[in-house]
Image 1 (cartoon, one colour):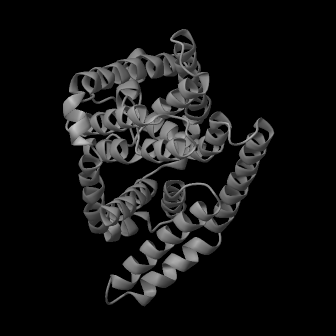
Image 2 (spheres, helix red, strand yellow; image 1 turned 45 degrees about the vertical axis):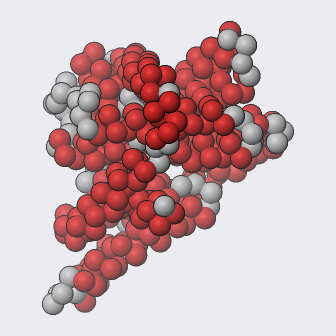
Length: 337
């Protein structure tokens, strides 16, 4: 099981690396406001709504806030793969969706720092210090990566192509090593593997070697991405699922409906058409793979109980499976919608 999860983690890393290779920085700047401000607003709204619901139902406010944080996360890996297969990464709704997912990935480190505060094992001041430190590290990390993009990266890739003129294995190895190096650096700094791997792809996408690099790593990406998707099914606790199938199905349907409505409303408030906002809402209506890590950390800090842990775990897995199996497909939308 541990080995499968490890390979699955590589699947997420390579999938986001390939997504970064296809990403367009000019288009990201266009959707930047809705991705950043809208993404933060979505997380805040879910925390408020779930916290309010918990208070009205007599549950712990901290547990409600955590559930809101948990529900606000969407699956970068699954949604990215879906957009690539549909050819929608360059469409307007695709760019807004990807930008929002990137914001969520950046926020994961801050949410990790929030969990000890909610669990009572860390003071508010300590939590604020941790979040401030993570924001500083994130800013420095992105600045250094940006500087490398215009100096080191083009020369390095050009050298690798010259050295691998007879065989592609050396270039493949160099591309994979670069992806894993940035992912490791990001994780070591307290950010996330996913953020580092995506940033590695974006750095190469600004050069003339993006298409060639994507061709070299595509087979590797597909292999590990398949392992990631298989691992989702292995995380489901089938005995608990069988005994509480009615509750879990109701929870999945409720999550999809509520997330679609909230996200659609947020995107629409930034002046986008109702069609574009609705497509983005449906695209982000599942719960992301980061939720598994958030659940584990919350359980460690005794923020949630055993039954709540299994319920959220089952809801997350079923929402991912239902999305990827096409249970709620989304229509196409042009870049000008």
